[in-house]
Length: 72
Image (cartoon, rainbow, N blue to C red; front, top):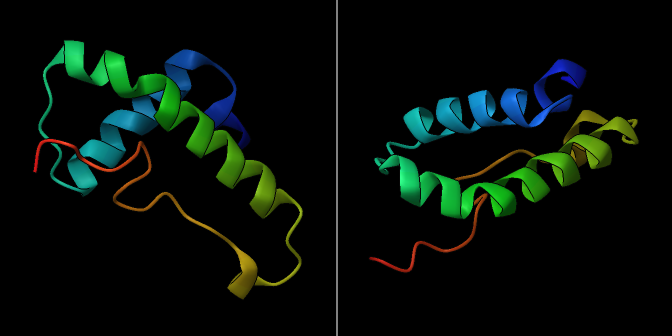
C-alpha cells in the first residue's frame, strides 16, 4: 500500500478505483473538489493499518471516504 499513497498522482489513481468500486460518477471538477478529503481519509486508513497487529482492527476506505454525499 505504500505505493498507493506515495504521491498525489498515486492517491488520485486510488481515488479513481474507489469511485469505480462504489459506483461514484463524478465529473473531474467534482472529483477535484472532493480529492483532499479523500486523500486525508486514505492516508489516515493507511497509517492506522500500518500500526495494527490484528487484521480485525484494520480499517478500509468505505463508501463515504470523502464525506457524506450531500447530493442524495
